[in-house]
Image (cartoon, rainbow, N blue to C red; front, top):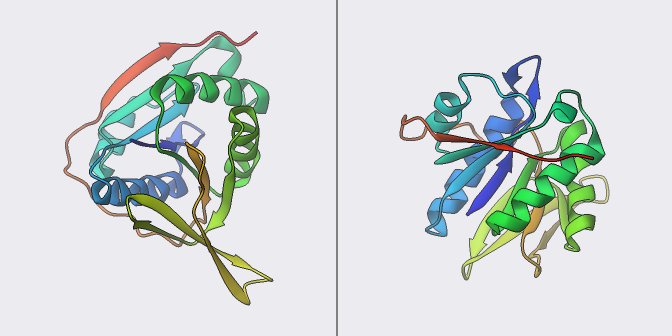
Length: 179
């Protein structure tokens, strides 16, 4: 399974999250697995339908009164618990300010590597391979992460937004304890 972090702003799902989820769905199909989404904190009522329309099979909504406002430590603690429980092959984040804040924190807590600001994702030999610009965009680096899960941020406005099956994703709300 490939898990995608969905960023919510002013009660709406950000376009960059939908693009990231679209790429996760495409790669999950190639790997013959599923793509799921996670929302930390309050989720819009339309989340299941909107994320399902892009191709997510399940939406995990992590709820706690402490997650009503953005807190890097709280969000990462909630994500870490879900990732340890669900054991995805990869966790995709949009490379927004929030994604760039949360992804390395999650990677550090899990003791795995991070591929940041990726502009291409491929499947080779059943493994995900990532490409990112280096040297101010003058060269490209292609890499595969050996540890599981692969934590990845995908550059916004690079991956096309595609429609999925149109079926609503199953929404599972889970209370998390954030001290």
